[in-house]
Image (cartoon, rainbow, N blue to C red; front, side, top):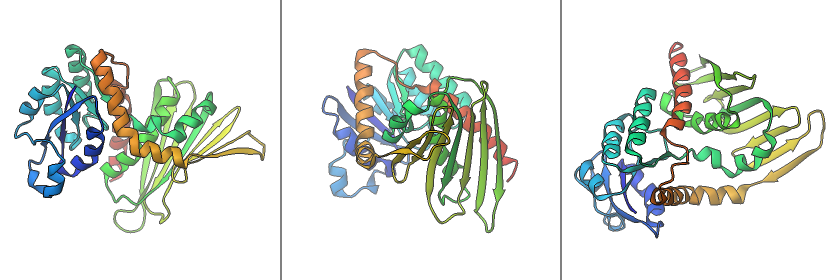
Length: 306
């Protein structure tokens, strides 16, 4: 397949290694959303394919478009790609607006083309190893601490993989989302509490702050059968029985490093194969919309506290 890249210039090099490793497919060129191809050194530019002056020219050449760039600017371009019958892959929701995501999902269905949002958080080795213990989960707690400024975009980027993992635990409909934001100390310091309640009783709590100096990314699941702890900084999984001191520990540092190095290329390789075979079974725009809708509810709620 012929693959084209639509992205901002600061993203090109991140994608380049993965795209050039797709030996069964051809990277035919890129379109920069900023339009500044001179941002690259001569050595960097030598390893990159042609830059197209217009996104439509790029779409005419390619079978599959890898979409990057600022989410708020994607909708019009992705609509045109889909109407031209091009497969579209993104490692982030294709629009920050839920209604736009739904419209893009409908266009992809109408055009009968493969489309995918990567949902990499669901395939993290630590999460994959923990999944057998998450059956019948009744409560999930997520503690996140990382300085990212008073930025909705930073908060959303931090929340995305963790909310996605929670939504993958159950098929229960989401009953209610509540959130509260508390400003602490100087400008830009705050803490956020979020609760997601599902119709059959599963509760998920998120405690987030950018006040603590220490960085933390942890999840805990409580069920009738097990207590499961995941640390996404040390890549350690701990499993214990409720009320017992004993626990099983497992470190997945090596697996996680390999995942980080290879995820983008591997996901694109599988998606390109699906496109060639006409399969549309991976998480698509409509499935990412479920996550996006929940993020939208949280953002609207937190704006009340601004």
